[in-house]
Length: 111
Image (cartoon, rainbow, N blue to C red):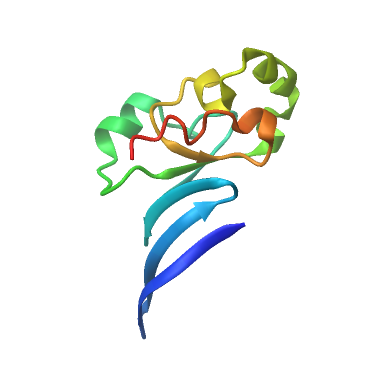
């Protein structure tokens, strides 16, 4: 469950903070950038391009989709450091819908 706190409402929309995502404390301001990944990578971009060319105010939330990682879930579980480390993701915030794949997602968060 995502805990969202509204800080400001206007006719144009609302701004707030995502306080927690599931069992993880996040404290992530909105509006924000959430990037969907396929197999642990941004489609058609390298991590180098994403880090050097995407100028964002805060670290985006990366969403790892389960269908793209389910075939390797046993290997990722044995690896023991979670899907982000297994996929070579940079320091980030990520959301995975499985405890096995989710290990270390927010532990690598710089905030």
